[in-house]
Length: 109
Image (cartoon, rainbow, N blue to C red; front, side):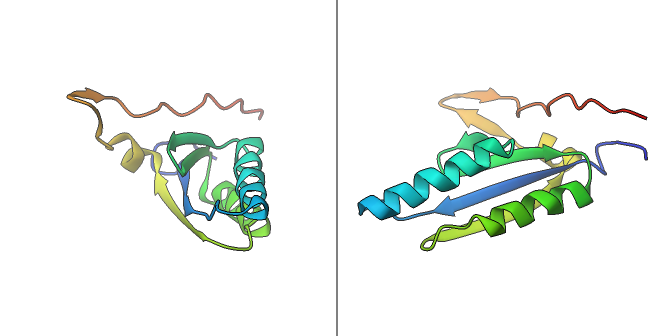
């Protein structure tokens, strides 16, 4: 299987979760910890992303998120190809920053 920028995917999870009560804060913390354990990194507040080697691998991570959804709030997931992700413009104050580079994946054949 050839790995290229059109086959590799980014899974982006965006969420708004309540934090007004102690159980809600626990659910929020648990959800974020799950994302981090599954290899997601924070792109921005309440936006986490993960590089996947294929669409099939991205679907595995989406299913993991679905199994760990908090009881309240809203979670949205989008997948984009590596080529689409690299075209993202990131602005920090008045200066432009390049997008995060995908992690180097070890492949065994």
